[in-house]
Amino acid sequence: MVKLKDVAEAAGVTIATVSIALSGKGRVSSSTRERVCRIADEMNYRPSGQNGRGQPGIDVGLIIADNQNMIIHDFIKFTETYQLRNQLEFVYNDGSSSSLPVLLNRQAAKGILHIGYIGDGIRRYLARNPDLPFVAINDAAEYSVKTDFTAGVNRAMQYLLALGHRKIAFYIGSEKYAVPRIFNRAIAKCIQEYDIDRSGCFMPCHFDGSNSVEYMNNSLKWARQVLLSENRPTACFCSGLMTARAVIYVAMEAGMRIPEDLSVLALGDEGDALNSYPFVTTISENYPLLTSTAMMMLQRRISGLSIDEKNINIDTGFVVRGSTGPNRKGKQ
Image (cartoon, rainbow, N blue to C red; front, side, top):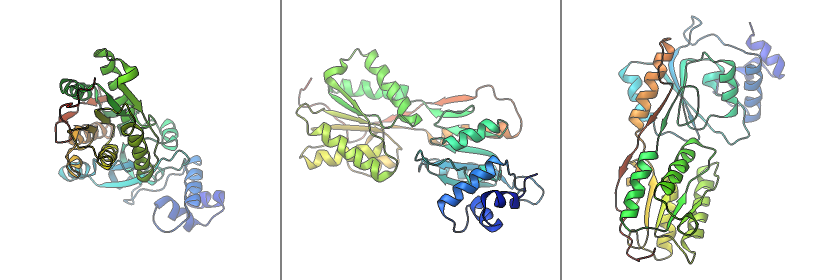
């Protein structure tokens, strides 16, 4: 059995440094933490449990990737209702880090719920530990619960077309992530279903963004590129509320009125849609249902019960607010 001192010797650091790096508590450089976690993972180091009996002291852990923190409230509510001991951990996947989250590296929880993009380090770990109860939200995994935007996007497109909009710009986001990929497929299906000419009327575009500042800057860049062109759209359909806010800002900066001169709608949380003005029309994910479905699946895995449906899709809601209205310019 690999011990803490074995990891310390292999990493060339002290036992105290290994303990700090694996626990996530205390001060140690990010490079040292990543190196220690990688070596511990390669050596298959398994610390004793939190409860002193060699068993995990946490019932369920939630790994939150890239600030995808929308389900925290529902997660805590679920664990309190069923009296489950829980722990949260935030991770960031910028494409360069292969370190393993502490919750996985220490095997501190009986089961893991993960929301957002699953990094390469976690995927390698899951491949080596296929029996670990693990359920993903909004990313591909053996067991997963994802939002299906197909019906919501279809309702939104019918709504825009009924309002007379034909020139619609799409910000589809980075296809590195599952949500923009699903959104893009739903958009493509609508374009084909309604037999719309893609060349002149639809202007899909996307930018990558590894953090909020970069994402907003890219959104502003895209909004100016689209809205300040001679053939500007009468509606913008965004894959996130941050981009929608950037579009509204650039439109108002250019003297346009929302929604008289430009309609804006987005994928986004219903509560967050009310945090800017005008309130944004949204296709909203059902986070309570996403969370409860994923948690029930995870509990069945922890208990060793059979699961008939390993990959479940949850429908969206479509809510019309003040950011959308009829196309009054008569542009086709």
